[in-house]
Image (cartoon, rainbow, N blue to C red; front, top):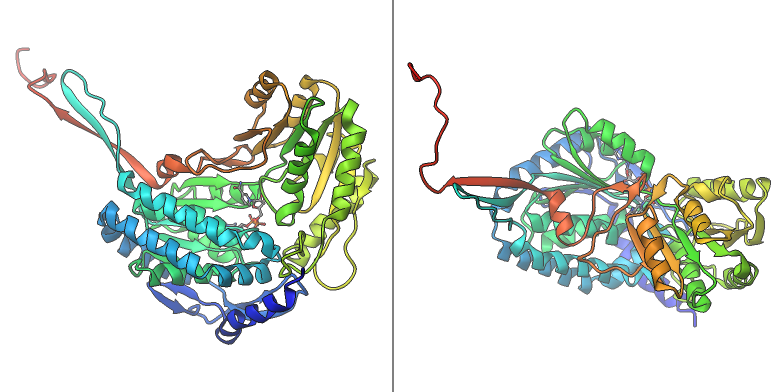
Length: 506
Ligand code: NAD
C-alpha cells in the first residue's frame, strides 16, 4: 500500500531546516559559507524544482579545509586505535538514530526509491562499525627477520586525504571511503557530488556531534571543475579516493600528477550477467532484473548486459520483458515504487540518447525505451534485445534502467563478448556446472565475480575494478593499503660486517 502521503509529511519536517538555512560547508567543526558567499541550487529529480541554496566551494574554501585537515592530522593519527574505534561506533549509532531522516532526504534529493534508501543509512552504519573494529589493528605489519636484522613493518596513516563521491547512493558510498580513512588515522576533506549534496552535510554534522574532533572531517560542496579540481591539486592532500566516471578518473590522475597524489579509483562498469542453459533460470532472471532496475539502474555494479545461451534466449528474454514491463515506476518516496526519476535532466538526456541509438543500430526494443510523460526525469524500465557487441548500448555505461540482451552459442563466445568492453568491474555467471562457473570466473576480466548470485557484499573482501573500472581495492584490510604508508624498520641484532670505505692501505 502506498505510504507516500505519510512519507511526504515526514519529509517536510526534515526539509524545513534545509530550506531555511541552505546547505553549508562543514570545516573545522563548524558550518561555514563560501568565502565569496557563492551558492548553487539543489534540485529534486521528482520535478526538477529547486529547494535550497548550496554553498559553492572555490579553491580558497578547499585551501581552508585542507589546511584544517593538515592541522588536525598529527593528533588524530596519534589517537589510539581504541579511541578511534569508540568514536566510529558512536558515529554508526548516530547514523542509525537518524536513519529515517537520511533516507527521506536522500530519496528526495537523488530520486532513489525509498525502499532502497531505507537500507542505505544502515549499510553506512555497518561500514563505520566494520572499520571501527579494524582501527585497533590498522597499524599492524609483518615480521621478516634475517640472521642479522630484525625487520618489521608498521603502517602509518598517509595524511590528510581528499574524498570525492558521486550522486547515485551518496550517503552510503561516502561512508565506504570516510570510515576506513578515519579508522586508519587520516583526516579528510570530502567533496560530495553537486547533484546530491544534502546528506553529505548531515554526515559531517553527525560525525562531529558523535565526537570526532574538529578539523578531522571537513566537507566542501561545489562543482567538480572548481572545488574538485582544487582538492586534487592541493599540496597538503596526500591521496585522493574517488568514486565516479572513468573519464573523471583520468582527469584526476592528471590533475594530481604535479603533487604526486596517490589515487584510488572506483569507476564505471558495463557488467555482464551470463546465463547458461543449465542455470536455475528463475533465480538468474530475478538477479538480472534486480541488478539493472534497482537503484534506478544508477549503480556501478549493475548487470547492464545480459548474455544468454541461444537455446534459452527467447524464453529468458520473454520473461525479462514481462518483468521489466511490470517494474513499478513512481514517486521515490512511495515505498511501493521500484524505479524513481533519474538524478538530473542532463543525465536523463544521456540515457535517452540510447533510446535513439539502440534501435538505429538494430537492437529490438523489447520493453520501455521511452521517457515517462509528465514532470520529473522518469524513464521506462528498458530492455534492448537481439543486440550485438558492436553497438553503443553494449559497450557504453548507460547508468540507467536499461538492459541489453545478447545471445551466445558457446562458453568461449560468452567469454569473448563479456571481455570485449573497456570496463571490468563485475561479472555474474549463472550455471549448474560448477567447473564451468569457475572457468568463467577465472577468465572474466573483472575485479569481482559472482557465480549464481547477485551482488552480495562481504565487507572484508576486495571491492574494485580492472581495466577502465578502477585502480585499487576497498574493503577489509585492502582499504588500509591505500590510506596508510607501509614502513619497514630494520634493527641490527648484533655486529654484522659493515663494508668499510676510506681506510688507507686497504
Ligand atoms: P562524475 O565522475 O561525474 O562525478 C563524481 C564526482 O567527481 C563528483 O563529486 C564531481 O563533482 C567530481 N568531479 C567531476 N569532475 C572532477 C574533476 N575534474 N576533478 C575532481 N573532481 C571532479 O561521476 P557521477 O556522474 O557523479 O557518478 C556516476 C559514475 O560513478 C558512474 O560512472 C558510476 O559507474 C561511477 N560509480 C562507480 C562506483 C564503483 O564503486 N566503481 C560506485 C558508484 C558509482
